[in-house]
Image 1 (tube, rainbow, N blue to C red):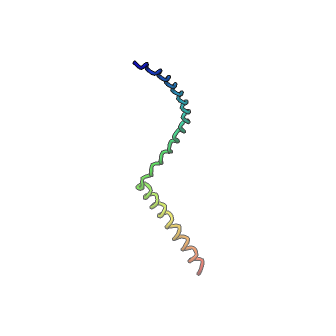
Image 2: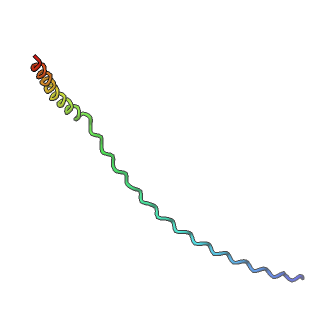
Image 3: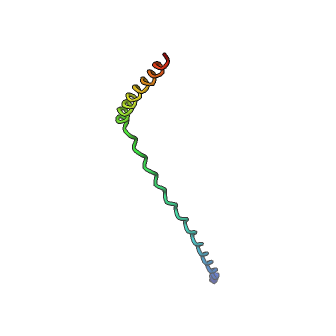
Length: 70
């Protein structure tokens, strides 16, 4: 019988390179809460009051120059 040829030694497995450390994930900056939109209904009465207050002032200003002119 033919003698079996000597089996070549198996090459050692190269060591696995260490995994580089994962950079820390930056914390997500919390989004500032959006201010609730003020209801439109309360604004309307306020605007009407301002208009009512301005109207008499305008009429008084108009009357003064007309009175001074003659």
